[in-house]
Image 1: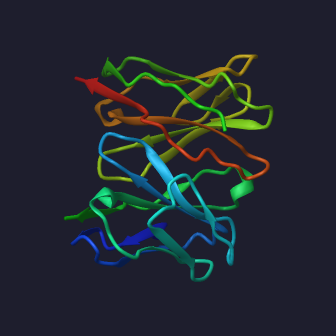
Image 2: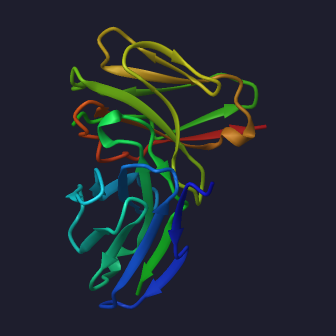
Length: 114
Length: 112
């Protein structure tokens, strides 16, 4: 039981390049989330998906797009990377968004944009 | 969503009890209080959640006064491995409006 798996673990991009961060969970959770964490800061919600087929913006959605591919997978895409998007990206899942149950996090993708 | 305020950092020694307080003055009636722990290079990990009074699990206790404008996470007899950042979140459990932002958290340093 792997929990929440994120790939890749590390990535370096040049300004203007695009990439997709992958996230998969094996806990049969309905809700999934993408957060970013800047050095010394807390986590900020980028996008979330309350259930398969739905996505909603979080606090800092600009510059990102998401796809809830199926119940297991939730990807985050940077269409044109900018240095301001250098951060650690965490994917999380929960049983149901409205249930207030705990968020289960992956170990993050460390992205550097030069 | 309710804004939370926590101390930036705390220091303790092994074997001591540590209490981390979080202020959430504008907490709403339906809001729950949840605490997470984060180690370096890892995602946060759920510790405990509560609505009022006291909640205890195998890891920690959560104390919430009657007015619910603050909460205190209590870690009994900490060890070096409890060195981490602790986040307090307040969010509506029933409608799905989770706390969007973790805030900067409290950095706990446990010394031998």
